[in-house]
Length: 192
Image (cartoon, rainbow, N blue to C red; front, side, top):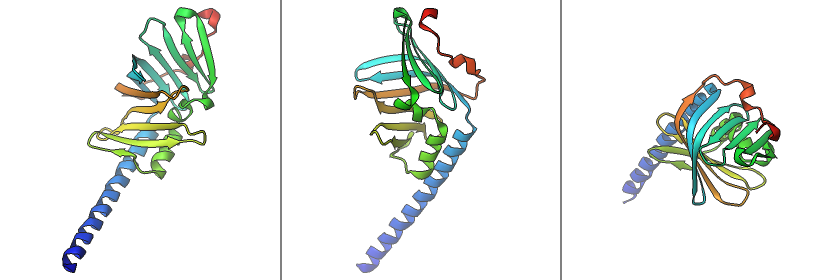
């Protein structure tokens, strides 16, 4: 009986060791992929509570993003690296927020994502996705999701300012397209 238990423990520890090696390779490859990424262009589907929106986004690391929503309000979100602007063209209104007060301060800073991957273990690992959770001092949580096979960013999950769950799904991802910095300029309300 003790030989069986010893044998089973030995198999269990070998399994754990092999899983750690596979996980370390996965993390290394994911970090290499992110390190080589300068820009992202993609379509998205965003779900907040029961409301779903679609559009396209352009990201340039660090901290710059522009997302055009396909809706009747003409909604655009722009981050110029310091400020996040939510633009509603239909109403000719721009709402400004410091990027540090939003989850985008983590999502758009690949060095923070790389550090999270380097220091942590995945919170989710299945046949399709790898997930890593980032939590800051203000209890903001962001789960970054990557495709397990291609290692490309697939989206993120977080909560908005009203504690609604936000799911952001990335499709048709293109990496390292040329994007000029002026593309992320926040307009004035008078120019809407």
